[in-house]
Image (cartoon, rainbow, N blue to C red; front, side, top):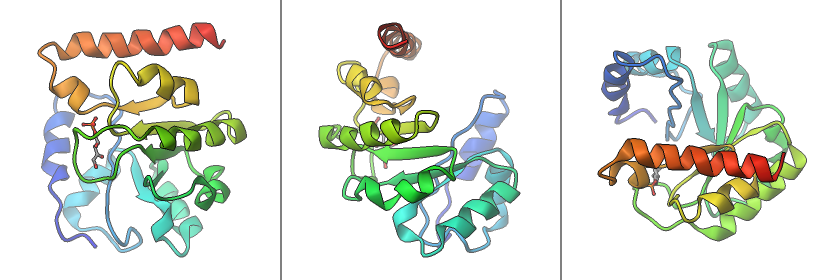
Length: 182
Ligand SMILES: O=C(CO)[C@H](O)[C@H](O)COP(=O)(O)O
């Protein structure tokens, strides 16, 4: 259901300042329903993801997002077993493993969820696997070691007095893992 959409103006403002790839997470109950005009702006600017466990016919939704020229992501909440989306993982560009209950930032990363990342990485070596929720500089090495190659960091970056430095440290942590596991 597209009842409340607050992200479009934010994305529109950001787009004025960067050509960076924008990864937009849409938490909607019926992603197959036609979106309102406000969301078309986002859709033209790249990614749409959906929580696979909600869908009866995920294959159709994946195809329709691709046809619109976007990349496709699928998300699983902490309580959703990874097996639920395994059959779809080969059809999407990215799987988002939520490591907190979706809703708000500042929660603690649920370490058990990293086991899903490991299983996905073992079966899909080329997949973009994103981890979202509770990432800190301390647990980032575990997240990367599990197999994540896309990381969301909200509180970590935005609560820092020096966000650029935090981003550099995150990049360093990713590179050192690549060196350890070429
Ligand atoms: O999707 C989210 C909440 O639904 C946030 O992106 C996520 O929780 C960010 O977490 P943090 O602030 O811990 O980095």
